Image 1: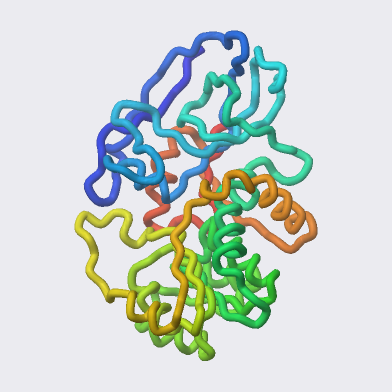
Image 2: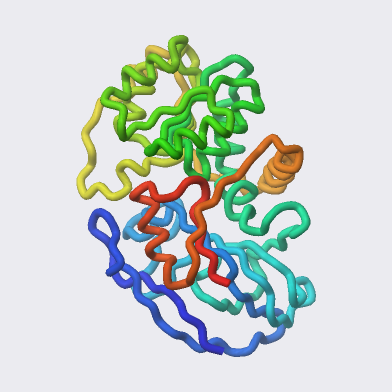
Length: 332
């Protein structure tokens, strides 16, 4: 069987372009004993993948030039030599960007297709939802009546963070990059939402939105928004450092206010984390998120692009703010 695959053609300098992606047709053999043939249904595109395009040490190995790019995907078993994964099984896992994938089944998890749309297992009930769950509830630990600020709040992680904070009884402020996203955050129950692209003074706007200061900050963005939040930290504030998308494409180290004095004066706790740190507890997180979703306490939003050949464009769109909620590509 032939399959299209997408390779990393070269390492980007600054913002990636279409030139970094190379399409290639490959031949797949029939499944051997223990193997399954998967047909990809949905591919997830995520900001963290930008870091994997660079060379150098990080929390996850970089993509190799000339090799397929890989990430979260939902796929269906269409041929099987593996008793644990019969034909028709729908699975989620870290898979190469291919239309069809030959797998030994390791690292694949079957999806309970009666609980939610299968695409949700790449968003609300998948890695982004789990990132929100553990980052907010384990690190920030919001208490009823406290103020929580979420940057990148209309993204796949941020939208879940805000809803979880409301479930905990907190007051929630989100930042996003368009009027439509601000309206969406209000729809989700955010108490305040600020459009950073049209707000001339974010420090002033955040101070007005949080007159009693900030107790918890879930940072997906970094940059000037984070600088402004740090000026508002209350005593013993907690900060979950999840992402820094504002600087992912910088070619030089950005210079900004040093945060140490502000953290010291507020006795704040800043903790960076990766959702993989909590891998042993993922089943707990999926179960609780699913329960809240089925109870109507959590909503999801997806930006779905159609077509395997549109995966690079959907990925590049992340850095232009084109997605609301989870960015996905529907392959089949």
